[in-house]
Length: 82
Image (tube, rainbow, N blue to C red; front, side, top):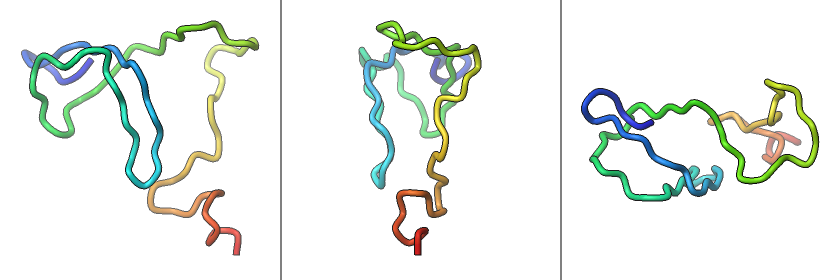
């Protein structure tokens, strides 16, 4: 769901690529019907997978660790290892 009130609409995410210096990019399955201001609220009820997971996972299991912290060195930053 994107935005609120009369400007609210629902979109389906087709693809997502992650981060790096240029930021992440999402691709929607269809164009949005309305214009939205930068910083408009984006929310969702969950994730639907297109194929089954190959292993069992407990509900609420953490999906990542050691995520980069914006503005701070992370484990991939050579300066952090010196």
